[in-house]
Image (cartoon, rainbow, N blue to C red):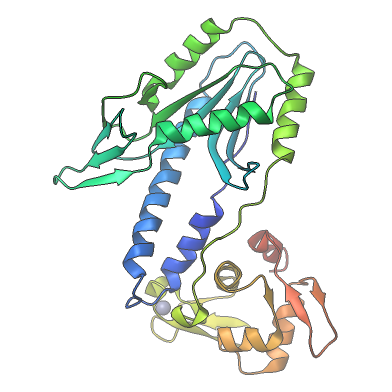
Amino acid sequence: MFIASREKPLKLLWLEALMRRLLKDDVEFHYFQEQYRRLDAGFAGEQKVDREWHELICPNTFYVLHNLHFKNAAEHIHQLDTLFICPQFIFVLEIKNIHGRLEFDQLTHQCTRTKIDGTVEGFPNALTQTERHIRFLKSLIANYPLPIEGAVVIANPSAIIINPSNALPIFHVSGLHKHLQLLFKKYPQKIITEDKLTQLVQMLLSKQTAPRMQTSVAPSRIRHGVLCPKCSYQHAMSFQRGTWKCSYCHYSSIKIFAEALLDYRLLVSHNITNQQLRTFFGIHSSDTATRLLRKFQFPYTGTYRNRVYHLPENLLDHMERFY
Ligand SMILES: [Zn+2]
């Protein structure tokens, strides 16, 4: 078996950084906070389902891939929470971590959630989303004769599912193993060889598109500086003799700079100049900024004066090597 590890989606990393830095009186603060809560709960739900795979008893090789991003012919995004692939079939899982009463209307295809306090809100219909993913996958793997099945898995045990569709199964995470056993019974024959299976997985991974942030927030709307984690990111720390220090709680750290620079990469830009580093992080001396940038050996372009440093995608791991 091969079970991929699930990485935090870019949008969640972006929202985490934004929650640290967005000014509390920003007009969109509550909007982004709600987005963050939903995405964070969604990620926690996906992780809960991930733990189930390790207990799966399956006679054949299987692959579990997470958070796959594809673009269809119309340039629209398909984001697949989890894909289970074995020589008998492919199984698409749409995972929802929602509490309350979830009601599916067959005629309008609307999904509504009623909270314990009685508030009713509309949700994107996970069943329709899954059907859309299945249609797309069928065209993507047209050269492989594997059947594609799908289901919506509810990660929150307190959710109550009302009026589910007949077209696609929807069940709590506790029903996952039983549902897989039904699929193994439905498709007892291996349709493709293990070599072909590996080839299919590699093809799927290679067809992915890198997720990109569609939203941005002007740097004037966020708090600048290296923010103190002990002060809930409310105060900027100052750089003194190679260490970042908080004048409010006296917390000091060298490594905290990596987290702050990651916020900069997520919210502002993938590139930074000496001048931009000084302005954003409140460093007074140009030499200090140069030393800091050189210490981490970031790749750069341009001559000394106009040098632009490129912050790598694996920024935290990259910087860890130089501490
Ligand atoms: Zn502090």
